[in-house]
Length: 211
Image (cartoon, rainbow, N blue to C red; front, side, top):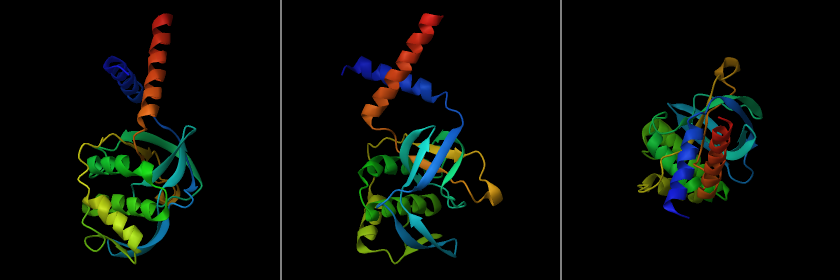
C-alpha cells in the first residue's frame, strides 16, 4: 500500500468522522465469558459491579465497549441516543484511557482480562491509576489472574499507542439519571479504518460527480 493511498484513506476517514452527530446506541448485555463480579468501594460507598466489556451496537455497527462513567448504572438491555466524542480531551485522563483500550481491548479473550481492563479504566478515571488499594476507587478480593492483568495494564507506559478512541456520550441518562451509561470503544483495526476511508473517498467522488 502506498503512502499516498494510506494518507487519502485516513483523510477521508477524518472527514467522515468530523460529521459525527447523535445516533442510536443499543447495549444488549455483558459480553459472555469476559467479565467478573467485583467488590468495589467508590468514594467510600461499597458496591458490587460486573466489570468487563458490554456488547453494544451504534447505528447497527457492533462493538465491545467499556464503561467510562461510574455515576450511572446501565439498565441492560437499553437503547438510547448518544453522541460520539473523542476520548482524549473529553474524559479525565482521556488520552491514557484511549491508549489503554487501543492497546488491550482487542486481545481480551477471558474473564480476568476483561475485568482487569475495566477496573484499570475506572481506576484511571477516578484516581489517575494509583492501584486497587488506594484512593477513592478500590477493588477487593481480586483473584490472582485479574490482579495480575490489572497491575500490568496500569504499569504499561503505552508508548507509541494511538490515543484515538470513541466515547459514546448519552444525550440523556434516562429516568432518575440511572439508566443510560457512556461507553468507550477502541479505534477500529487498520483494515476497518481503511475500509471506512475508502467509503469516505467513494462518497466524495459521488458528490464531485453530482456537482
